[in-house]
Image (cartoon, rainbow, N blue to C red; front, side, top):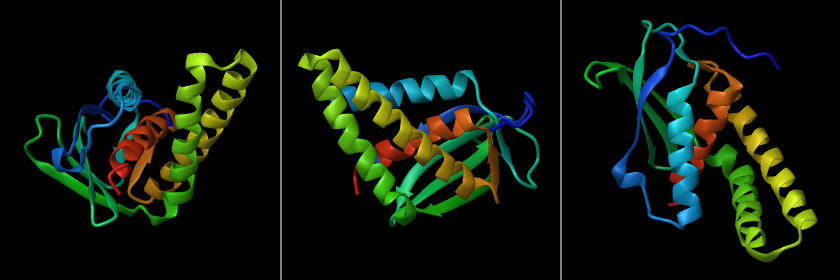
Amino acid sequence: MADSPRDSSQRVVAVDLDQGSIRRWSHDIEHERAVAIYDLLEENYFSPVGEPPGPYAVTLAVEENRLSLDIRTADGGTPIARVVLPLAGFRRVVRDYFTVCENYFAAIRNAPPARIEALDQGRRALHDEGSELLKERLAPKIEVDFSTARRLFTLMCVLHLRL
């Protein structure tokens, strides 16, 4: 699947997770969140459909079983758009993803390499499935490339943990 063409103005330059949506979890989950934010800011394609060019500041939150993306100008001041997605359609893939992640993180401490590799392949496959679903659900309102969808899926999962 080809990614969208890159336009340096069509990107996220600041991302924040709503503090009311965050619950502190294990070191592994906190690490995944930090890496996803870092990677997202390093490289992404994010283009709200029908909105002025960015760059953008985005705040992600979970509100009433919905993922909310508050999109603003890069300085975080002027609102651009607010996109809300129901989380119900993501429940299975998120639940399965976290089950495999828990097993993976436990396995890397003492399991044989073949078991770790199998769990990692399963983890990546579920992550890809969730990322494709997120990209598809965002498409009417926000165009993102696959890499950006992967990072946003990770952040969505971290927020989804509180449900």
